[in-house]
Length: 309
Length: 276
Image 1 (cartoon, rainbow over the protein chains, first blue to last red):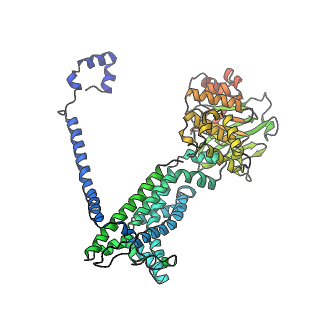
Image 2: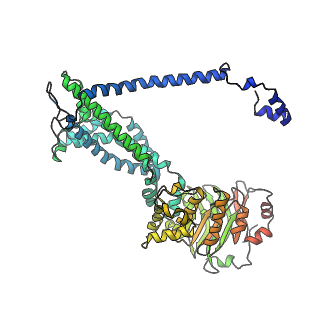
Image 3: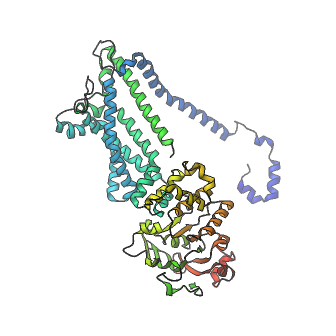
């Protein structure tokens, strides 16, 4: 076993002689050496455990595809939810409802979230307010989603006197906000300081530096956070049970946003506990569509965040 | 200790900088970061149309001095300066001075090339828009790129990412970006330290060309570079006698004079490579 220190103690000539003494067997691959054995065993264990971790993941996807495809047809996009025993039917209204409520939530949480992130990262990162907001956002990001529903119920549903897409969107925005704030703050902080210096050195004000340089540079990271938040909101059931409830009818224009509104998540929740087989099948098909939507959003997010310029 | 060569006629008499083509007259008495005194007693007059180099061992405050010439140090928490820096007769640390406006007249090139993660063209349009430039942007961009000897290399990829350029090209882009807005003075903080010798040579040639139109102040670790390009050189050294490490100006004068016939012992030792 020749190492640096030995060589240093021996001097160059001695080191050469020592090297000549080491047999070629010393250089051969062998599992009999303990450290080689250990390394090999660790690799085997790691590989095995990776497969174990994939089992539940793939079984969920397999169940979804197998059961979901069975009830799936193009008419699910164009039909209303079926009653028990009815042939056909779909959940077009729930898809639209989910998209609209997630859209409302995004329109609320993204502007507020990005503004807050700019404050946290650039304007007053060490202020007491920033520490408080950061702490709150961290707490809120682990907030049970049902509480967001209760808050929106108390604040919006009780006040406006009814369940609505607006209330659902606001409940979802409460869930999205901390994710947007924290990931956007991180993304802005990741912009190298030399980029800020370049802008300031050219005579940009702090606002110009933030909006025209820092934010565009951080945009891929900001978008990733937004997409994560959107994907989470699209799958939430609990906040919508208290706020948008469900509807068996198509959304009726803009005024329909003030009425109870269907969503995929609530449809799955309702139908999966029904005794009627056709409704259970619809729940599986809706699950498949919901997973496809979330996957699609994630893929869009990834391609946006890997895009430069 | 401080010996500003008075022979060429700019000493205390030209403090307001209006005479003798002094565009920036830097007179730093004390410069602090918090309670740490980083620099003391540094007087450097910078002459219009010349290249002034700051040399000295690491930690002697040469970059700090350079950065205080366009108020970049304002970004550092706890920065305080006692003394004046006159730019065309105005003290840029005066209470009525807007540091943003100062930086539009005194541009800066940094140690690390720092193009924005945008297209080459938009790297320019950003600065031009800041300055309220109303003319033909494309023409201005071409002029600046030609000025930085980069036009032929990038003219076909103006709308490609500036980050795709090599390090040397990125640094010349940063120089072009700085001169596009036509500042009076260009500060360069070790602009070649991240570059290979060929790119370094190109930037040195560029500096010599640019001094016809812009006044340049450069910080460099490379004594040969100061000797090759600078008209005037200031040598800063670290004083450890009063506790702490405070940089100060040891000697300032014509580069040839300073390198061939330094007056101060510290300068002689540093130039001969006995420390630093």
